[in-house]
Image 1 (tube, helix red, strand yellow):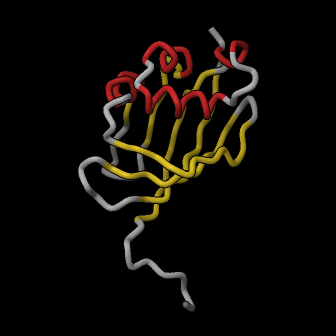
Image 2 (tube, helix red, strand yellow):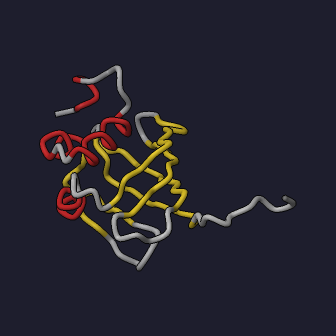
Length: 123
């Protein structure tokens, strides 16, 4: 099932984020390829589709200011601010996605920790 055909008004990445945060496992299953690998920016871990499905809807990560910076039929890039339920420092997260057969098959993230005393250089 190619979910993009069912929701042509919404990007695959927007659909993914909404399904992940709400815990909509049926929609996630339709969006994430069986061979998906997720390379988070910490710990050297490699996550699979089942790991992504298990985290969905748990409120372990909440994002705000989500933006799809680029998306076509092959790749996508998003940016958001991530807040963590365990109280760790919020992060600005850039994520790169690769698609295969209309589904997400590869995800890599990079992040910058944000602190309350963060200031732009020169200010």
